Length: 526
Image (cartoon, rainbow, N blue to C red; front, top):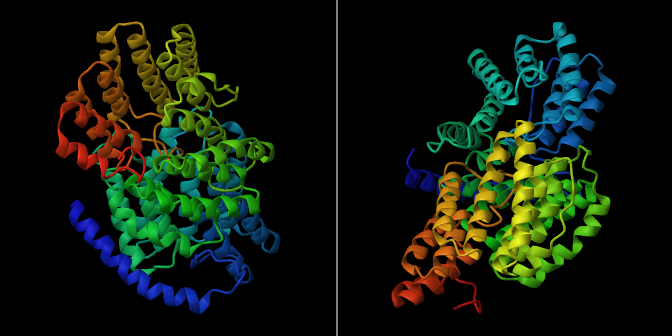
């Protein structure tokens, strides 16, 4: 499916949905009533638990994992033989399937217990239900010996087998599409699995426009720069399908961020933060705050961004890294707590502030890396080479810890950060050739992967840093090329727009200067 046709389809779908569903919203929504979308998942469990089971599935489709576990337990309280309730608990315990981070044993143990319980009760289940149960067991079986990637691949294969055997089961097709997204390697630039999943989900969404999982998973399927336009219709609709789910309010901002709709991102994330705080999902609130802070900084609403930074201690006081609540796992909260102050310093070029950030030791090394990376850049930009070198050494130590933990994705991300930091240290030490070599490698490696859903974007994109470096070396034409590369992936990104304008000005290219100046926020650099 070509990109233009995908955009056209999205626009047509969005218009149709808006006209058809706005009437449904007004006809069926009751003030204060829970709104999670419309889902029906047939089971062989007692007919009396069907409404509760369907609510649990709706919560699961919006990644409200703590609430879905609670709802599945309600099912078991009324029907202790319901094997599929244990299946739902196991899948909820697995968490966000699009996350590349390795699951810790404390998360896998209760998930395996639930999966085993589902298997124990599966004799009384249907063949269809046994297919779901066999699949979820693949995520947890022998996890001490089988690596996570192997188990994810096995789960996707089991769900594909279920779809083949149960072709009329739309829920199986939906969960399989999500499994394809989770399986997709971040290094595959054909996006074959994401496109296959998105195509399936879009067709089903036309038939079930109020289904929360369909809108949600379309956004996840297309949550990469090359595909983001395809998710516009889902992003515009999902928050209205399930406004009672904090993650449904946040998730559209993944698309808004990818296409540079900053105010829309702010609006939906503020709503998500309020709902997450109300339900005690503090990791989800922090995750939404990170996206909102990023958007504020692109609009140069620095006071609002600073308010987010200042609110972090209050969030941290309520935050339990081990709690299973909303979509965001505990480590996502740790990531936000580290990233928000780092973004505030780096996006504004406050190098002194960046170099003075205080790292917090955690059990999740790559969250710590965000602070050390900011400190290293800040120290190099202020000429404090000793501090820069010390923080680069800390990044190296974190890299070693991640290698030992077999955390492949984040090992590479920290390696990229370390290369970028080494580049700026080399420049501070008047070694320009070394600086350029390190930055070229950082850019090449960043291009070969994708960002994690946990972050709205890198703290400092490698191509943007390369542009800044080339400007320092008096090479504005080369710098302009690097800024353009960043804007291809990160449209509307302020520092790259400003850098491109400045590079064009330095070159004397008034037309290009004006082109980028008009894209800057009013009153900021125009």
